[in-house]
Amino acid sequence: MKKYFLKHKMLLAAVILANLVLAALSASAAFILRDALNVALEMNLSGFRNVIVISAIYLPIFAASRFLVEVLSAKLGGKIIQKVRHDVFSGIMSRDMTTFGSVNSADYISALSNDIELFEKNYLSQIFLLIYNVLTPIFAIGIMFYLSPIVAGFVLLSLVLLVVIPSLFGKGLQSKQEKLSGRLSLFTIKNKDIFSGFEVIKSYQMAKQANKDFAEQNKEVYKAQLSFDYIRGVTVSLSMFLGLLTQIGTILVAAYLIIQGNLTGGALLALVQASSQISMPLQMLSEAAPMISGSKAVVARLLSLAQVEDSPFGTDTATFDEAISIKNLEFAYPENDAPVLKNINFTFEKNKKYALIGKSGCGKTTLTKAMVGYLRDYQGKIVYDTSELHALSEDSVGKLSSMIHQNVYMFDEDIAKNIHLDKDYEDADFRAAIDDSGVAQFLDNERTLETQVGENGSNLSGGQRQRIAVARALTRNKPLMILDEGTSAVDRLTARDIETRLLGKEDLTLITITHALDEDMLSQYDEIIYMEDGTIAEHGHYLNLVSQDGSFSKFLAMSAQ
Image 1 (tube, rainbow, N blue to C red):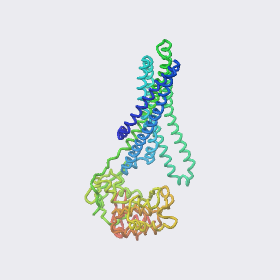
Image 2: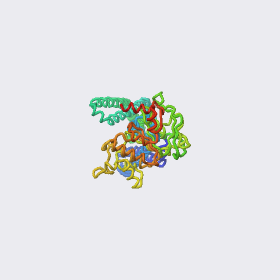
Image 3: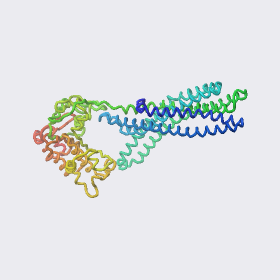
Image 4: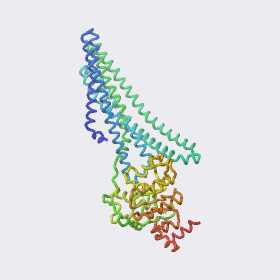
């Protein structure tokens, strides 16, 4: 976390300097109070006028210093929060598909909201308080020794207790805050799950159960917060008790010295003021220290997420001028022992059209995800022209392919932005993508390219969302397109039209994962790839496979029943 402070060295120096001035001014108020009381007791009107003049100069300077500390601290704190939040977001976005998907996305949201709030409240703001509350007692102690070494010695002894005793609760606070952060994360995950499944909850009359689940999670958050606040309350109470004990003890010791004739009334008032400039800051320090210590887990989590992950790929530039070759490919998801892909060998030639067919769970989608670099822990080789995938940069691989899934994600923007995704295109190319995808068919006077799609396309039908996804891919003009049930949500006539247009693109390599066993459409593909249990059982032109009476032919016959 040090690097975030040092990144703004000049601003940090200004914050420390401003706090230094403010601390000196706060402590020096003791001299004004001393002189005011002494001249009052002495009936010294001339001296009283001098105190008034000094006070008139002192107060505006003090107020200005206080304002400067607040402004500079807010500016530095804002910059640090902004940078931490940016780094956490960048760290998350640097993850590959496998690593990103291993964590619930609500956990990332919780880190960017709940954990950042805890970091700001219990760590960063306490650090800024620390600066002032360390500097002020230093000046105040110097003043106390100047006024009365005996009283100063008593105060120092009291302050040892004020610092040491509350600090004993640091580990407890850290444990409770870590638990609170975890509960807030689970709370966010659960709520996201409920809201994402709102339609299912309504359809299956699950609102009562959802309310029950929410209440349970809400109760757990309350218990975690209460547990944290309990220990914090003990720490604060002890700090206040010891601080008050220090102030009262200071007055009693000073009063005894006055009785003995070794101290003036004005000096007593000055000592009380100076002791408050020690006890109150140290009381706040004793509260802040456990909170800062208790925030270590949250800080560690944020720093961990802020780490930009090293790409599992290399730095070479990917090309797809001839073919993508799959050699002895095997893959198993971390949570499963059984491999999903087993000894896959195949070559996808540039500009040819392939239909990938097989029962659900046979490995079709996994194969295409591995091809485009979504899955990194595979065995075997995936070769782009002459270069293996791991030697290629992730960015250059991504520029070669577009993947369209059955469940299309829509950003809460207008239709046009969901297609071009903030990239500039020639009007003719953009219009061609709209026409070829079928988006133009549902545009009219009421629904235009500027129409908002709503959260995840809630204002559109499933078919309209998939047309937009196809248009989104076509605007990129990438050499490889993968349709993973990419037209399943549109009517068959529209699906045939979109698919036929894509099949007619000579400069496009098309891989279609489909369950639609339409002979007219399948016969237009250069090759059918039939998968069974993670392997390629058969491949070839549709008519040849049907005539061989093999695995694919039997699959067709079984599907027709």
